[in-house]
Image (cartoon, rainbow over all chains, first blue to last red; front, side):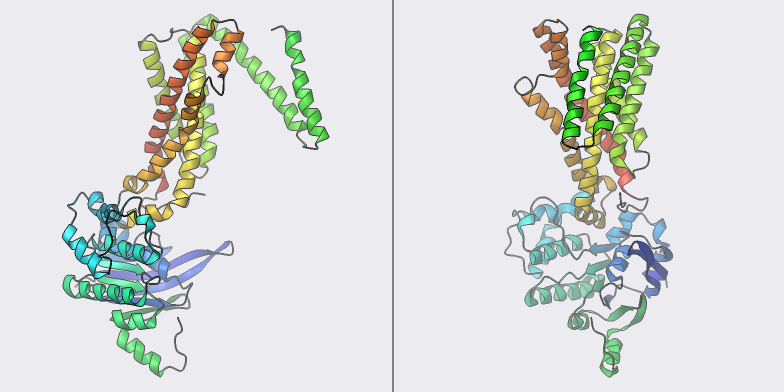
Length: 239
Length: 250
């Protein structure tokens, strides 16, 4: 069976003190079906860059990526991004109201706006008190982050690329987002790759862990295995 | 104006140089080069125009207009260093505007089809379009950098390049038209434009001079709009790679 996503020997360089050096290399793995993956690692290991590469917002210096057996470069970028959707760490609200932001993907793709689905999602992330006519730029950081997530979910992607999307949320909102994404995986088979520095969150949401260290994907195992290894290891991973 | 009277105008240059020496501005060399260049360029243009006006050959008019467009395009393109092929896009935008403007002015018989009208009016509109192109490209660069988050959010949601930069383009076109629109609002109250002043000094009837000035202001407004909008349509794809990624435009 063709894997859903396949990464082969990815290598990315970055500018470091006015010269290019390797950020990571030899990143090779596959995702057979939509999975819940937590992407862990210390800052500066290239986790966000890897997500941006998977979203086709950046290119690799070498290596290949496949989606459903098709080479990334051969798939139209728009189709790619509709299937593998990136949610940035810093949520950017588009000019206009909350409704304008929620309707944007239906406008882009000339589709009917799924209002009832949008209401369900908004309620699930704890924002049902918001007036949709409110200017999106006036929302708090945490509210913007959740609107950005709902905005991407309305695209109905197959995989979400989540870059520390709960970093600015309180505990209750964080749990609501985790529950929603867990449910969407169960019911609608939406997978995700979630960059987080919160080990507790990784434990709660993921079934698999990608751990980046020393410029490569140092560990790619089931979450339970990773946690067992951690418990028995004298040098525990600090994120 | 006699040559003697013209030579007296050098006094203004000497005053500027003295100020530069006194205030240690270190501008004397630049002022001297600028003075010589301005004098030679203007005198040369004067003789060229005299020749073209007398010959009334359409080919000379076309050559002069082409030279104006190319020089204007090279100058405006300096604002978009790093964007390949921008020069051709500017040339195409300004040339289209020039053909449209002159086509209208001549076909509606607003001006006479003589070099005396075509060349100065073309020079002014091309110059104005050059400023509009420069402002558009400067603002496009700024907007693309400051709105990177907005553009990438739209790309992440599957937007086309056009959809991703639509607002950025709109804001840049608007910015490029600010000087022309401001000038239109304040003309006669804050400034007496060069063309009108020149005609009055040369002995023309002030009302006639004003009529031409009104014409030129209206032509300026639409020339800025047409050039900037056309340039925006021709340039926006250059902001992206073939994989629809935002280029690092430095």
